[in-house]
Every structure is written in C-alpha cells, then in structure tokens.
Image (cartoon, rainbow over all chains, first blue to last red; front, side, top):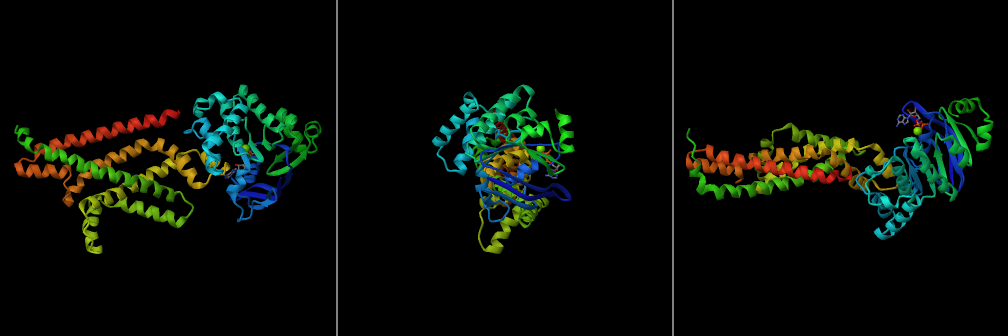
Length: 240
Length: 219
Ligand SMILES: Nc1ncnc2c1ncn2[C@@H]1O[C@H](COP(=O)(O)OP(=O)(O)O)[C@@H](O)[C@H]1O
Ligand SMILES: [Mg+2]
C-alpha cells in the first residue's frame, strides 16, 4: 500500500533521513520507535508530503508522490494524520471539526457529513461533546476528536505521530484504546510511539530508527526479546 | 472667558449632518482597507517572491508618505492624468482605503504568522485546499488575536479622516470651519465636533470590545 524507496531528507546541511527503504502493506500496523531526533516524525511527514523528500520515492497504491505531476491534495485525502499536539481547529465546534474537511474536500452535504461524524464521535466515545469547543476538552478527549476528524475523510492509511506523548498519564489509555480498536478493524497504520507495551501488543512490525536510518525492522516478539543490533538493545535498556 | 455656544445653535443641524458624511466615507474606507489589506497580507506570505516584494513596496509607499499628500495627489492628480473629474468622496475612500490597507496588511500578516503552524499542517493533512485553509481556518484565528490592533487602526482612520477637509469635502471638520468662519468665532464649533469625534471613537471602541467577546466564545 505504501512503499518507501531510497528516501533521503535533509534540512539545509542536516541529513535527517538516510537511505530509508520499507513497505507497509494493506492492513498492517507498523510501530516506529527510536530515540528523540532520530527522524521518526520526518519520515511520517514525508509520507503525506508535509515534508518534501530530498531524494527517493514514495509510492502509495502505485502512485509516486515524489513526482511533480502528483496531485498532493488527492493523495492526502487517502492519508489521515494524528499529531502529538492534536491541532484541532479551536474556532470550530467538535462537530464542525469533523465535518469541515469532508464537506469542503469531498463535497459531502452537511447532512451526510454530520451523519458520519455522529457515528465517529460515538466510536471514540464523545457523542456528548459534539457541540463543545475544543478548548473545553481534556487532552485525551481532544486527541480522540482528532482521530475522529482524520477518520471522517475515510482514509486508507492512518499516520500517528506520538499520539499520547502530550497527554497526562491517566489519559493515555483512553486514546490507545481507540487506536487499538482501529487497528483491530483492519486499518493500515503507522504509529510513532514511545509506548512500548502498546507497540508490542498492537503492532505487526516494529521499525527501529536511529540517526535518520532504519536500524532494525522485525516482528515485535523478536524485537523486544532479542533485538539484533546493539543500538536497539541500548535503546530498549533505557526505555523498558 | 469668551465662550458662547448659543450662537452655534442655528448651525447644529448642519454640523450633525456632517456625522453621516464623515461616517459614510470612513465606513467605506474601513471596508476597502480591510479587504485589500487582508489580500495584501496573503500576498506577503505567499511563495512568489516577486509578488511579496511588490506587496512590501506597496506598504512602504503608503506608510512612508504623508496621508494628506496622498489625498491631494489622488484628488488633483487623477483629473490631470486621466482627465476624469474625481469627486471628493471617491478620492477620499480611495486614499483612505488604500492607505489603511497598507497598515491592515501588516497587522494581518503578523496575525497569520502568529497562528500555530500546526493548524496549517492539520488542514494540509486533511487535503483542504490552500485558499479554504487560509480563509476558513487560519484567518479566523488570526482575526481574534489582531482585533485590538485592527480596532486601533480603524480609530486612527476615523480621526485622520478630518484631513479630507483639505479637498473641500463637507465632513464634520470642514463644517466646523465653515460655521466658525460664519460666526467669526472658530472655537465653539471646533469644540462641538471634537466631542462628536470623541463619541464616534468611543462607539467604535465599544463595538470592538463586543466583537472581541463574541470571538472569544470558543475559549
Ligand atoms: N523543519 C526542520 N528544520 C530543520 N531541522 C529539522 C526540521 N524538522 C526536524 N528537524 C531535525 O531533524 C531531526 C529529526 O527530527 P524528527 O524527525 O522530529 O525526529 P523524531 O521525531 O524522531 O524525534 C532533528 O535533529 C530535528 O532537529
Ligand atoms: Mg517526533
């Protein structure tokens, strides 16, 4: 479903991603882990072209995102993204946060958009917050709304960039549960996370990054019990 | 102490009429200034360097020369160059509108840049086109932050509007001068229009506060 080939990304002189090669298959859940500054966010952001790759190719459903003729807006419609800091639209009610993009981008009628938004709010357990403004919500609620907002576009792929890192500890679970049930429903997902328990339980595959490279890629049970590289073992020693 | 307001009484309707004359072109100029200013602000943050430079030049010309000079150049220059007899009203809304837009564009640009970059990214990630992103997501948030500065600009414009009296536009200020000349007593009508200007500014200030409160309902 998404294939990254020989990807390089640098900011001015700083090489942030080097020689990234990986494929994410339909229905697969991939957890990306690694030390801070290792390029996890940049990799994720290249996948929906929030960052422009310096070199290399990214294919989604056989379409090369890195060639100029690709319609970026169309590609982004297929990819939902959830950010560490939510980035809900603060001047819109929760319901409008969910319906604005489907109405504007996909041309849904207000009614159609609201019907599907209602379903999604129920799915993330926030039906009662429909008419609330984001600033009145807790962090966990905001992130669940953000997930619902991304899902409202009916994406084929979801990208999560440390979705629980900005949350108070007691709110982590409610968000992880939503992501988990999404994974169970068969959604293709790439999740950057520091929640090792979550990665172990939910991911089909772990990508471990360090210094802008993919150092190790393996099944979670292998990765957590017997990592192949010193760097991965060193990292796990620190976080586990 | 030689102050006699009673002699002004017969002229009161004439002076009060000036309120509408002044308000009329000030409101139109504010609207023109706001929309052109917002547009110029969008150009200033665009990716086309040439357009950005053009917008900066536009701003610097209007901010770098006296308003009264701009007004006279428009009023006397357009008939000379285009052989079109521009009315004082048209000259006034054009000059004040464009002049104000230069200041508004700087205010709006700063406001847009102060909006969290994550808002733009969230909109991009959803596939929302640039224009809608700006108009429906970024600008409304920028507006909230810059409302006080915008109100300030509108108040300045209202007060500076008195300059139109130099092109014989019968605004409040001009009327005070006319009445003063008629009575051989300039001070009383000046004080009266002074009070009127002050009240107009107070009303604008109150409107601004009201609007601010409405926009803050999402907090
Ligand atoms: N827009 C940017 N400009 C310059 N440097 C950046 C930018 N974004 C990220 N970086 C740098 O790229 C490196 C990788 O960042 P990031 O992908 O955010 O890492 P991670 O998500 O793994 O913590 C860091 O050194 C960071 O400072
Ligand atoms: Mg990151």
